[in-house]
Image 1 (cartoon, rainbow, N blue to C red):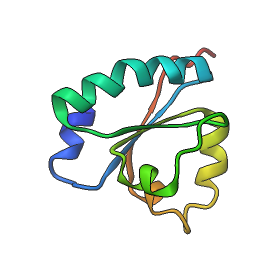
Image 2: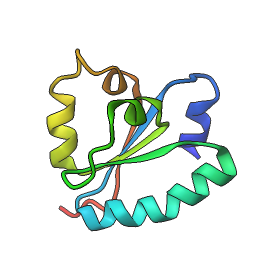
Image 3: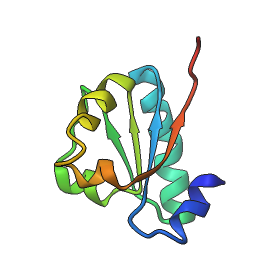
Length: 97
């Protein structure tokens, strides 16, 4: 619901979904890749150590599904990466403390 609300007032804003394991990232991609694309028209991209889409795919995505390790590495260069600066909602999913 928050993801949907974010897309209306701020076009270009990104949702970052952080899952603790690559397997959970893939699970989200299977589920959301179809749901969000078909129902809302959002573009979802996987950003992990195994899947590194080109910069244009990440830049045009509305939702980035990633692992903590990958997002840590990507977000450290936030000044050079517009997609990091456009992140407006970060969701930490399936985190076990």
